[in-house]
Length: 260
Image 1 (cartoon, helix red, strand yellow):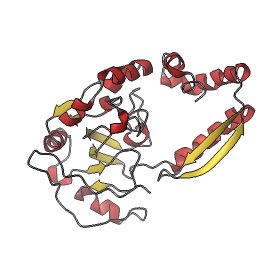
Image 2 (tube, helix red, strand yellow):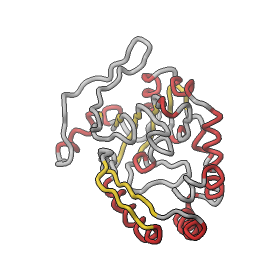
Image 3 (cartoon, one colour):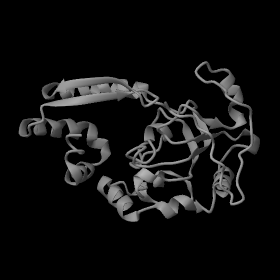
Image 4 (tube, helix red, strand yellow):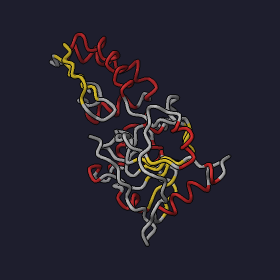
């Protein structure tokens, strides 16, 4: 927050010009300089659990921030919600947005980052479908380039000025690239399924989520049933059903539970 957040556009542009692969070294170095030249007296570390609930708040004197921050970051990563499968053929995401993640959809969930760095603790995903953009993003669709297929609904909501500004500032232009665009949800899903490799139709592993921030409830294809029955950390709710579409080919919104 001191280096990039409080640094505004200049701080963000300067840091990203070196590439995110160097952040782990540069951010502590720049922080040391800022601690000497500014009047920041403390930091507040807020840790959330997998349900977005605050589970710890730590007030840290500025001189202890560089020591405590890595410790808190480790705890936060351990508590982060994740998709509980190693392999996904098609990941359908109802919505992405800046209010969901700075990257639109959290790379720690999808395994895909605009920087090109893959997350080894995430599932292997063949195709990602994005259905919508959150209203609170105000058209900033940065991160859309991590999807493979999107709906026309998403395309029509994109504010290219804010999206491009965000992508250029981060130096990750792939974050703003436009994927395959389909007129509705049914065709988007069909394209994703058709382009999956090495899997038959009956064995397709499809995971459908609301967004990468709310993972308490997932909709999955029947190909996961055998895996779920052997898991003590997962609970099956309801019976198998078809995906229902309206006359325009848009999926009838799935009933996701409140994250709280």
